[in-house]
Length: 326
Image (cartoon, rainbow, N blue to C red; front, side, top):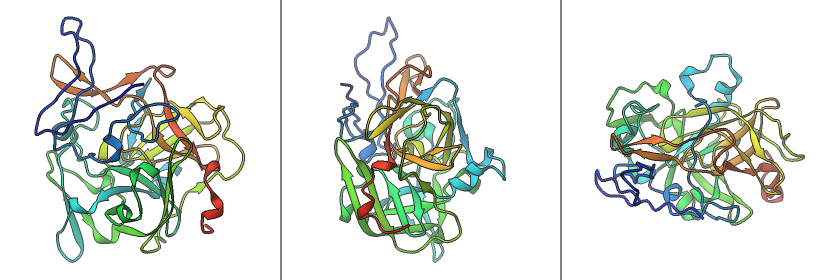
């Protein structure tokens, strides 16, 4: 069992005991400005029976890309428009009649990441990811919400990506109100040893983009080429592509080597051959480790076949009898 205890304290970094002489890698604890302070950063047990999920990391080559790095005609770019960021209402301020602002810090300042780390200058905003499976139906991980009351406490933000245009050291992110939807009704939610999903009806239809199609029958091929789209660590939308399946025999979940992190919980795991969602990203291996020489965090790296892998709940195991037609 691997347990990660995260303690929020202003501009402080705590780590587990390690031998300085050996300079072993240790997990660093984020500061109080670290903005993913909800379910994704709770202590958890990283086993197939765990009920809460958090960490992810980099496997082999870093295959993460921003939306701006995708070609305009690339299918992934269009599919990415169906992915939303979860932002708790308490973090949002009404700017004017047409926009909101969200106070933030970038990955370097907010989570003490080393300045040369990938995406270090980009702002942290969200806590989980979600995706449209109908014009007014949103699917995410069950541990991203507690209950129907918690569902009402969040905004779900469309198009939170780097094409919004961020300047270095940005302290606020501006979001158009037309890009925000809210929870109208929590239709179905489960978080247990078998299931980790939440389906909600949102307050209005989103008709300017195509919802994602999910697999309802059959089983993903073990040699499928996968991509994950979401908001790791609260960052603008990131696509982790070229992922492969490592374990495909489990009944409710499969394991992949996608380059994902906390905050990716609720992200769609997409089959690039069929363009169907094969599952919901729910948990994985270590996120980051301390660079003891520099005193800052770095993304945790494994080879493609090392570490425990990222756990994905199969969409075929969703209780469709409780779902409205979509």
